[in-house]
Length: 284
Image (tube, rainbow, N blue to C red; front, side, top):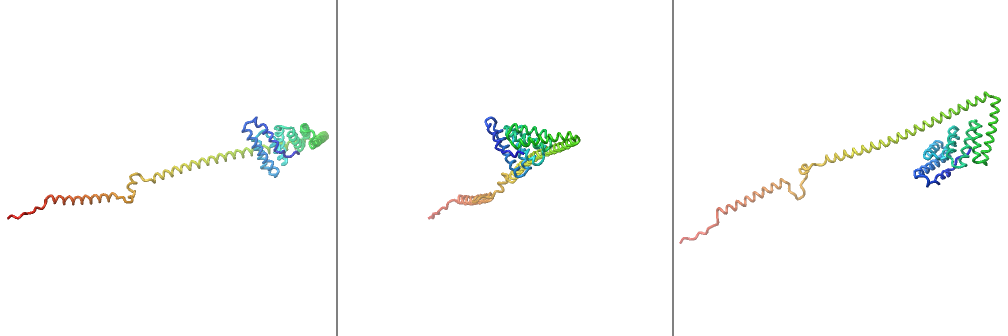
C-alpha cells in the first residue's frame, strides 16, 4: 500500500498564482494547512481528528488530490474499504501528475483485492503501471491479482454454488459499507447543522446582551436625570455661599438701617422746630 503523500506536492497549485484570484490562493493555502494537520494526526493514530482535517482541506479546495488520497489511507487502515475506494478515486480524478495517479490507482487495486474483486484489481494495477511502469510493488500486486483471478475463475467452474455464495457475501459487505457511509454522511450533516445552529444562537445571545446593556444604560441615564434637582428646588436648597447674607439677614439689615435713618431724621426735624438758640440782651 502506498503511504501518506508528502504535502509538498500541493504547492504545485501555488505555481499558478498569477492565473487565479487571491481568494482561491487563500483557499489553497488553508487546504494545504489542513492537510498538514491531518497528516500529523494520522501519524499519531488520531483517526478522528485526521478525518476532520482532511475533510476541511477538501472543502477548502475541491481540486486537492493529496487530502483525499491520505484520507483514503486512513479509511483503509480502519478497514472501511468502500470509503477508502471513494477517496482514492477522487484523488485520481484530481491528480495533476503521473506519480499521483499511479499511487491512487495502486491503492484502488488494493481495495479491490480486499474485496476479492480480482478482475477490477487487475485493471486498477494495470492503470497504475501505465503511469509508473517501473514500480516493483505495483508489478508484484498486478501479477498476484492475475493469479487470484485465474484461481477464482477455476473455482467458479468447479463450484458454481460457491461462486454465488461469494457474490452474495460480497454484495452484503458492499451494502454494509454503503449503509455505514450514508450513516456517517448523515451524522456529518447533523453535526454541521448543529454547529451552524450553535453559531447563530451565540450571535443571537450577543445581540440580546447588547440590547440589554443599551437598555440598562438608558435606564441609568434616566435615573440620573430624575436625581438632578430642578431650577426652583436648586435655589431653595442651595446653601448660602461664604460671606454672603441670606435673604432673611438682608431684610433684617434693611429694617435696621431704615430705623436708624428714621431716628436721624427725627433729630433733624426736632432741631428745625426748636430753631437756633437766641442770646438775650439786657434791657438797661
